[in-house]
Image 1 (cartoon, rainbow, N blue to C red):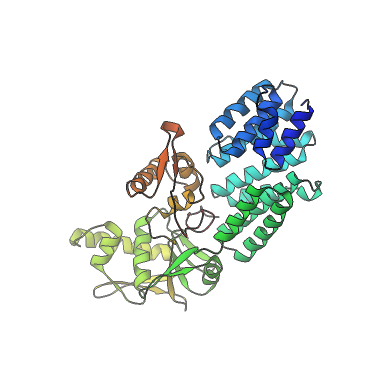
Image 2: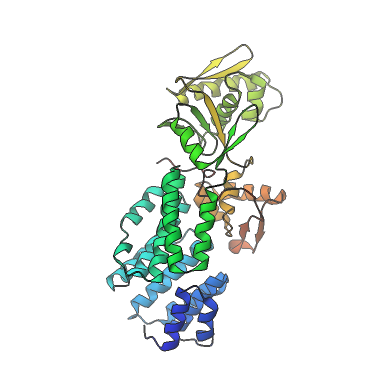
Length: 413
């Protein structure tokens, strides 16, 4: 890419987090490098629609011999897609751009492309793949420029996110401390704010311990300690029953999980059949057909729990009995809402499409749309745009952790 003094100055301004300074230098220019820088500046200012259009124009304006410039445009477009929560992009395009940048010695932008790919994988719950991408990072061998420090901070944020999803509090705090140092070395206020917000999330409740005497909020450290204890945990955050390293996922069996949760909340007492019918099937009256179905589902629950627990019949209903020596504990999301997983994703402050939410939650788009409609009717979410451009945001959820915490069910790892 041919560079003149104004282009160089604008690029430096963008690297320092000064989009207005960059626009002052290239706002009236329409050559390819200026279009690309204007697109990045508009993205930093939050006008993502204009930013995407400018980057598309820049990519077309660069000639076939300017492969590096086109690759940089692809990386910038991927970053805009990530921010706008358009998570369904073609992974091959970003991989090809990264390979081009590495082949031409642009290791800083190649590292940034790697970070973007890892962050997308984190958002959609593909943690092992995100870890593999980060394992290939070589930022330590790069010069300590501001852009490199920004890359180190971004990589550390992803590492912290993976640790949080895996419920490793100490590892997450170490990664966030590293991200904070790197962000301040980069001198980019927006990045410092992002790291600080992630660190504050660790000091918010990650879950609730449900008990007859009243619920108690738990920090991530406390959740980690609970899961390492001999307790039988009915985990309503990830829809599973677990004891230590052994876990049974009931995410695709909602009736069985509803029964397990009801039995766990009542432990060590039993639960009347009518209550179980209401919790599992929504029936107000437990007639003989409901009782027959309940017996079938309880049998399935016994088989699913295997060596973790038994379900005993009592005179008035059923009771849960762990096979181990620990107590039964019910762990629930911080906010008691049937659509807590959707709220958790929206709580990151970004505008999500329903398709991106479905991808991140591993469920159908129509299911997500029904949840969004219910939340909108309750005034908990709001939308803007129409059709494929429609995006959803949450006005405010005080004290609610981001999607990096426990409220999003993850696929089996």
